[in-house]
Image (cartoon, rainbow, N blue to C red; front, side, top):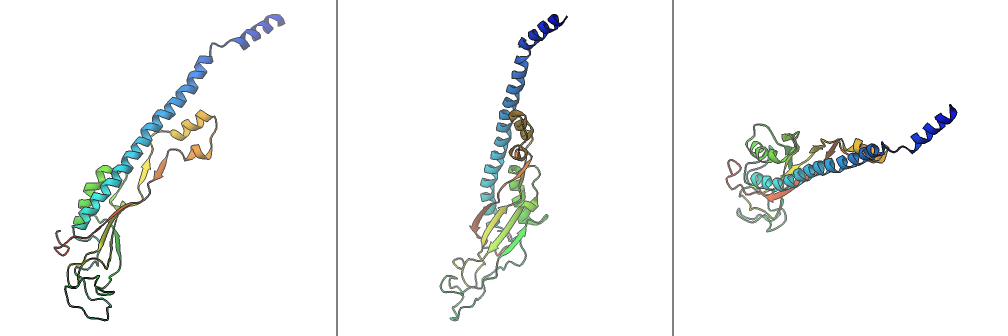
Length: 213
């Protein structure tokens, strides 16, 4: 009886009929990881590159439309220059010719014309969970732009910030399965990541004094 058991154990030890199934399991895991990674990272690259390009066009829209942020002046007023230059003098003629009203920063506002136009233009290129709150407008004084008494010409910046990208594939779990253990790197792979801020700046060109562009 023991001899038969010993023979069967030897046959079982030499049996490789299930080896192909094990090899297939390892290979398919690795192939799925590569395939899904290509898909997800391709989606991420598409959204990033497209958003980066579209924000440049959005800055162009904002530069020729009325300001989103309240308090942005319509005209250049006298600054701190000790020499009183006449109206029409370039702001760059001397230090302090035109007053520096400061920097105005705000998020896009629902119902506000410029915000709605920029949002309508941008949203097609952004991840699905993006909102208007991800769009930030900034208006900065530049002494090299404009002239005393003329339309206020700020540097207009449109910035996309806080954009989250959601992976749809379980890349972390597949990576852990492929290497046989869970690590900090596999836990960080997939899930949700945040894009770095994307921005573009142009000088304002609203010669209609900030009403309709």
